Each structure stands twice: as structure tokens, then as C-alpha cells.
Amino acid sequence: MSQNDIVKLRAVELTDYGHLALFLSEFEHGKRNTTFWLEKFCHWWDGNPSFCRDTPRGWLINDNIQIVGFLGCVPHTLMVDGLQCKCYSATTWRVLKKYRRHSNRLAFRLVSHSSNTLLFATTLSPHTRKFMVARHGEKIPWQSNYRLISIICRDTLRRTNIAKKFGMFEHPNPAYSVFPSRIEPNTVPSSCTRFSCVFLKFADERFDVLWRNTNHQFGLTTVRTFSFINWLGAYDLDSRNILTLTQQDVVYGYAIFSIKKVGDYRCLFVRDFWTDFRDLEAVFCLASELRSHGKFQKCDFVQLPHIGDEFVGLLSFLGYRAILDQSTNEYVKIGTHCPWVRFLSNAYISDFASDI
Image (tube, rainbow, N blue to C red; front, side, top):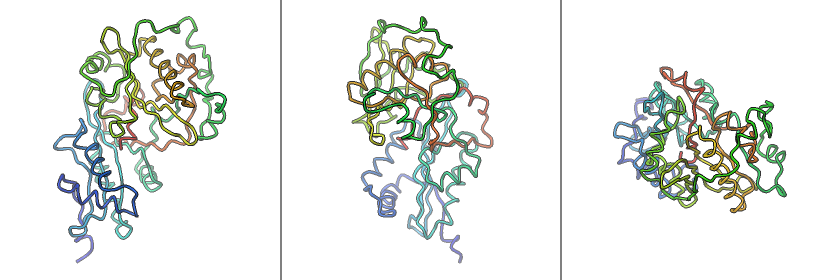
């Protein structure tokens, strides 16, 4: 009997959680205990609003009854041309050294399952990156071309230092200069008198009203119902905050953020930034309040996601600067039968890498 007859590939079941958590906690003398992994499983799957009964949790390699390999699959929901569609993220590719020749069986199963959609891989090991490139994976274009950075503490941090520190370079296009001509100074809001800003730990039904009124803005974007907002970053709930823009108890925008260490620096890191982007005052108020809060929290800089080229000019008046990111480790594989390619040039995806 060959080893292939003994070593089997199968889907993860709910009843596997205990043994899988033990396998991951012991893998190569791992630093995470079984409680950590059980909480991860709950976040990835059972507590994920995009998860349903027919969604695969991932796949296992079994030698008889022993788990010797695992690759996780985390679902997300996108709005594509007005329709809700599912995509996936790969996570936690672990195979014991003795069984490494079976590793690609896991990856091919996930790629096959994702043939009609997008497959994200956002925390890549060298082996995973090699596999994604070989399977025609691409660096995520709408998140990784550049980052919007606003320096707060100029005494200890300079733009050139942060660029050098993180392998970033200022955008060469003159349209991304500090005061670009594409947005005239007299069109920039001078104050935020219309809105109030409040900090919340959880979203509520008011956020669904905002989503229904604004979900048409991009050809492809993350679904932002209140259940999704509450899931994003919930694994680190103590540090997650939702800056909410309101007027007479109506929600007009929000930014999900946490404060984290990036090298030697303290960063206010924005996971998602959403409003009616035609309302420049709302965009300006959110970005301005994030910068003010970062200063209050003694952060060195604020980092926003790539919202769209046209907002680089507006936000430059608040000190935000577009910086090319050459060190990205985020890839997407477009399924061979995926029908959404034409929408990728008008896409805006939440940063969910920390949830994977």
C-alpha cells in the first residue's frame, strides 16, 4: 500500500476543532496555545457573517486519523456590480516536514474551490508567495500601489525616514505632490460644522442605512453591513475603535482603526474608511479627526487605506502623503472562471489581513 493510500485529504469539520487546535499549537514548537487557535476558529468561521453551512473551513491532511497538515479558508462577502458574491482568504498553511510533498494538494484544493471568485493571500511565507506567483497570483492593485500616511510627530519622524524604514518611496507622479493642482484650495472644506464624531465599540442598524445608501460607489467592494463591521477587527476588540460621523443620530461615515507598533513607531492604523465619497466634507472630517486622535494618542503617524486617486489631493491638505509601498506581501488570485475582472480597476477592499 502506498503512502498516498494512507494519507488522505478532507474538509475540516466542526468536530475537528480540538485536534486541529492541538496540531497547530504544537507545530514546530508553536508559541500559540490551543485556546488561541480555538478563538481563531470561532472568528474565521462560526462568528463570521460570511460563513454558512456550505462554506469550507479549509482542508486537512490525515495520516490514518492523525492530522499532519492544514490549510484554512476564510470567507468574505463582496458587492460586485450591485450583487453580493463570496470570495476567500487562505490562512495558516501548515504541513509536517515528513509530509511536505503533499502540501500542494491542500493549495490546489483551495484554488479549485475559488475558480469562480477571488482568492486572497495576505500573510505570505516564501513558499506561499512562490505558489501564488506560479499560479498567476498578482499583488493586490487597489491596496498595495501606495499607502496614505500622515506624519504627526515631526520632531522624531521625517517623511524620508519612514520611506526608508519601510521600503517605501514617494509617488513619482506630480499629481500626488503635497498641493496637487487637481483639487483647488477653495474646494477644500474649512471646518466640519455639519457632523459630530463619536467613538463606538460596535456598529448598529444605523450603519446598514449608510451601506444601503452608498454601496453603489465602487464596481467591486467589501460588503459593509453592521454585522460585517462588527466582525472586522473583532479578534482584537480591546484595541479596535469605530470613529463614527453622525448628524442628528444618522450615521454618515466611519473609520475602523487600532493603534499598533510598526517597528519603532506608534501608528494609528485604519482598517476601513467609509462614507459617501461625493461628500468632501465627510471625507475631510473623518480624515481630520483621525489625525487629531492620533496626535492625542501620541502616535507618530496615521495610515489610511488606498481609497482612490482623487482623494490623495484632498487629503494632502491635511498632511496626508501618498507613498509607494514596495514591501507589500498581499496577493490575489483571480479565478480562471471569475467574471469580475472588468471591475477590478474600480475596487476598494477593506483591510482584513489582521483577521486572517
